[in-house]
Amino acid sequence: MKNFVLGFLATVLLILIVPLTYLRLGAAEVRGDVRAPSWESRLMRFARHASVTRSAQGIQNPLPHSDEQLIAGAKMYLDGCAGCHGRPGRPARNRIAYAPPPEFAHVGSPYREPELFWVVKHGIRRTGMSAYASFYSDQQVWQLVEFVQHMNNLPPAVFDAIQPKRP
Amino acid sequence: MKKFITGSSCAIVFLAIALAAYLVLGFMDVAADRRPSALEAGFMTASLEASVRRRAPQMQNPLANSDDTLIAGGKLYLNDCVGCHGGPGQPPSHFGATFYPPAPQFPSAGTQFSEAQIFWVAKNGIRMTGMYPQGASYSDSQLWSLAAFISRARNLPPAVVKSIQPPLSK
Image (cartoon, rainbow over all chains, first blue to last red; front, side):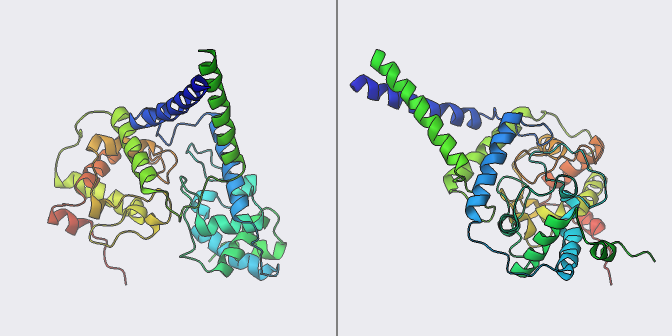
């Protein structure tokens, strides 16, 4: 029994010390233009998704669905989000960055509305995604979320309303 | 010895299951507006810096050490970096603090990195941060001028500050 406990503790210690040493000695890759191995990005995507789902439990969209909400959301999106997340109707940019911002117009959103609401408000740690709670009201964030969810399937009236005006 | 190995194997299985459960059940906090512990943040920052020191080239800035270099870099900085990293003579960028890890505020806090290390970070970006690789957007020579500017952002010659000020807009 004593040997069992010793073996257990020694292994736990070793498993903690090895990665911490690896990190502290600067052995970890930090370049943003080098892709992570696919097992790593898949595992982290999965864990991130699980965490967002957990955090967004109980949040509900209080806004009625309407074209006005979509148009208001579109304006904020084109202003504040399109730089990283892409514009509807434009080709996807094949950018190497880790973690890459999702191109919503091409891949859609991996989240449901309450989860997207939570992400926009609180951001995602260790990515370029900011917490926007101090820039937008809850109502504005819901409008934004509404637009992101329907970006690839907009009512024609909304689509026309958000096209850039030609002089 | 046999019991020692059994204990060791059990520890491996136990830690693997604990880690998988932590990740899969969504316990890894991903909110950018809640900060991790000072211990974690400090350790990860030190690891990041160690990795940059290990990988970045050890060389001098090939550009002339002159006000012209600083001005060229300053103009690029005011165009593209200032939104997150803060401008000379301005309060720290609020936006730069809305993601995690937050963007370092060069004009107020300076940087520990050498010019070659700044060049390397600007060119390649930093994984798992908002620092986007700029190598596709700028030439090496532009990035070196930027590195010269950032490394002296806390202590710029007044002539440089004056000539990079944007014209007052009405």
